[in-house]
Length: 406
Figure 1 (tube, rainbow, N blue to C red):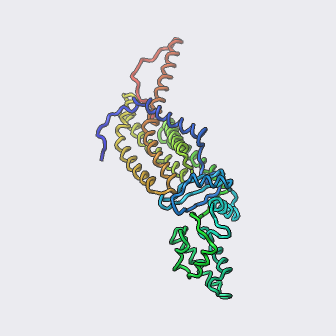
Figure 2: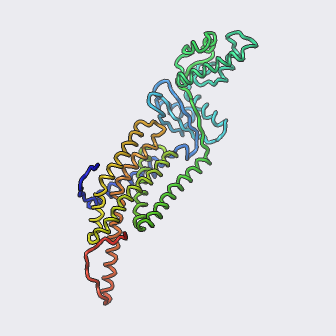
Figure 3: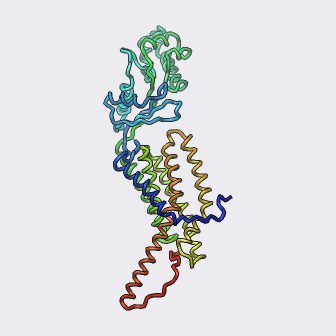
């Protein structure tokens, strides 16, 4: 299957447009990283506490932020989590202690900040643990069981918490919803001692600063080692200029992808690093396909200029490039649109990276080879002119040939 039959597009003739395009997006990303959003590091790298909160209705982030600010929680990040109809919000705090107390502290900070109209003397059933419900029932003893109450109220408390978490996704709209799950006397007692907020803290996670620092260092080393390995491989497989062109291309792709995260203010997490490493290999593979065709054509078309050979090689591989990149792009686009919040960063990196990686194999890597050849040719002419000025014989002018080693 082919999209194009014998295309003859002058890609190198448009290299200045490509350069302008790359400069605009690269500079915009760098400016964003330096002066605007910085590099938005996820909790994996910066350390902190993640609090997953579910609301009874669509969360109002402006109101949530205002309540958190009033409670003294100013350095927080808010992010919608999961499908829109689940009404979940991910709140990231700067709490970085890795202990059981820190987990409870992060949870309690969010609960205290968001509970705005808590009735005096009542507890929040949506955020109550099994032990809280059990202790309350044991104290009130609504069934008048006396010394035989422990097992019965333990079962009631487990049933109540299980129904809330599994059947109602963690949030009750009314205590009367528990009728049928517990005896009427127990439900009545809960109405006396509990109220319902419009949210529930479902989970709390902590990443310590030492772990975050270690992950950040390992992520940078992983990207660096992949670039070095690619340079060495292409140096031996082709020639050093091919390796240099490929490394510059991948650096270009990575810079624009990270810049896109900064411009969009999307956090870079471990899954994003995995996506970037995937793109290093993907972009390198596409570049090698073009380089391999250039090498083959150099052997067959020795008398043609390198720029013409490169243009012809790109056109010959264009259909394959469009098919491969197009199908991959459709897959990751579907992943981005329907994969949910957990895969959002990973799929966003792949969407941007595949577009830029395919573009750079044509618009960045190949022109570097031609620019190097032109520079080497001009340097040779300069040396010949210097030799002629000193009385030497100037070599006969010959038609420029493709001199990059096959």
